[in-house]
Image (tube, rainbow, N blue to C red):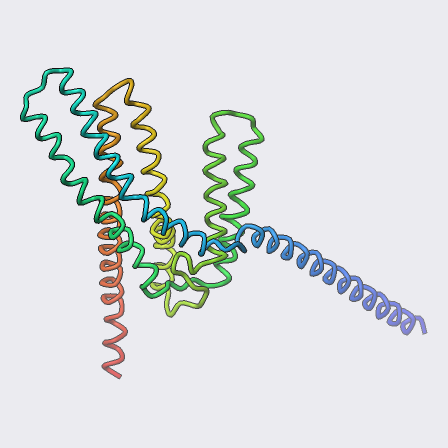
Length: 288
């Protein structure tokens, strides 16, 4: 009789433990769901905006004002050099050579928007890269929310030397959230890659795709910044101001072409590597 009572007691205790474990599991699942909802809400607050249409609008207007900025920078570069040369009694041939600088500026003014469009075509017209949806979510949380928290943590130190790194961390985090919430902006789609090589290529080139997608915006900001910086230098050092204006005039044309050729070489190298890696598999298929 005592054995039966003991078995009944053990059964009741086991049932009670099972119920407790089930309740704990349900509570954990409930809190986990709340955390997921909170994270999704935080990501969506930043990412669920019409960033793609805003970026298209910015690219359109920057492409329109860029030729004028290049022309103005070229004229200011020549004017600054001429003033400096006249002050220093430079030979007439130097003056003519300085005016000749306007020739490449004229080409840059005409071709810079086309060079930017050429670079963007990798994303707009090319085949989208594939990244796993689960990995994209992890990247959003770590790089996005983690970057924002890091920036806030640095700001809370109240150290002026940490202000710039904090701002950079927050900007980087926001960009990552935007690009991963709206992956079409950078020519990426959430899907499952065919093989590990394709996945590695997509991850390695993701930052490059972000740069290409934002290149027009960055070039426009650089053009405005170069003009302002040159004007600030104008009253201190004429040659430095001329160099700033000249760089502002030519960078919008040169940088997109450099990015285009580097991306082309990288893609060719990776495709060549993929072809070599696939040779043993194709030979095995031929033997079969």
